[in-house]
Every structure is written in structure tokens, then in C-alpha cells.
Length: 222
Image 1 (tube, rainbow, N blue to C red):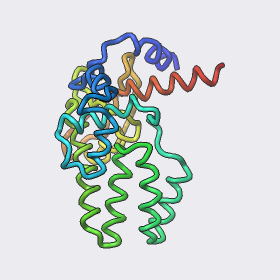
Image 2: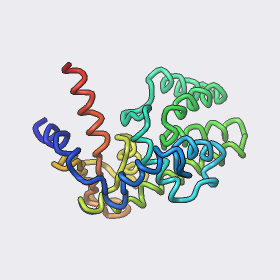
Image 3: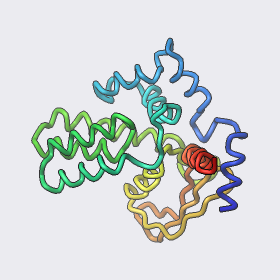
């Protein structure tokens, strides 16, 4: 808890350039209504499909989410999450898609639910829409991989949500042994060896999830 408090207290004092992500630049572009990177404009293009966005715009979309009013790093509303999973298990893919899209209305960058919606569209044999959401999922995932390599604090993967840490670990088929929150907004996660990539540990920058938690703590104490 002491480490968490220190991390939250000092995170706002540090520069907004993290690994390969310049949050000052992204905030400026995505909140400027005259910019081609203005977040509502990016969302309109993303709704058409991920291929309508350049790599720079996809990066702004993923990381610009932290500057929106809907930002939450701790997952969707439980009601929508439960409804989607329940419908999916029953084979009611159309209702699962509706629930999933309600989740994406608040967080279009959610890797898990872009993937799940793609699976639901495959379930009803709508390959056109399925491929649309596959691209959304894959392109957003690549943005995280390009933020760093996870091998050090200086080159940590930069994530906007806690679930994205676990998603990356799952994709790399890693079994976690320990997780340590380091001063300076970093998660250090160690893994069982051997694994396919012989990865012993990965660093994730979790600055924005921590800041969000800090604000929640402040509000609850008022």
C-alpha cells in the first residue's frame, strides 16, 4: 500500500513521455476539435473499420482513450459483461453482439470485447463484420507491442487497462509467478520458465490505471 501511495502521489509530477508514447502530444491532438486526430473523428473512422486509420491514428485512438470522460481501466459494466457471456454460452450470438457493442460504446479500444464480438459474428456466419472486428482487435494489440518491448522500465509495455496486461501474458502463453508494483507506475511481472519465448519477466507501465485509482480513493475519502 505504501508503494501504491507513492506511485499515485508522484505519477502526476513526471513527464508524459512513456516508452514510445508521448501522452502530451496525444492529449493535444485528440482534444483539439480542429485536429485530424480529434477523438470523435478517430471514432467515426474506427467504426468504419481499423483499416481506415493510419498507425499514428490507431495509436492516438488507443492511448487517447485515457483523456475521455468514459475512461475506466477496470473493465465494462458487470451487467453488460454478464449478459454477453451468458448469451454467448447459449449460442445467442445476436444478443451477445448487442451487449458487446454497448461495452464498446464506452471503450472502443477494449481488446477482449472486440475479439469476442468477432467470434460472435463468426458464430452467425457474418464473415464481413467478423473480419472488421478481428482487424480492430489485431491492430490495437499491435499498438501495445509497439509501445516498447517489456524488457526494462525504460522500454515497458504501456497499457491503459489492467486487462491488457493479462491479455498480453495470455497471448504469449506465460504463467505468472509474481507481480510487484514498482515506484514510478510500473508493474514487474515474473513468469515460470521455460516458456515459448523464454521470458523471465515483463515490465508494464500502468500510470493511468494508477492515477484513476488515486482519483477514486480521493473521492471516497471526501
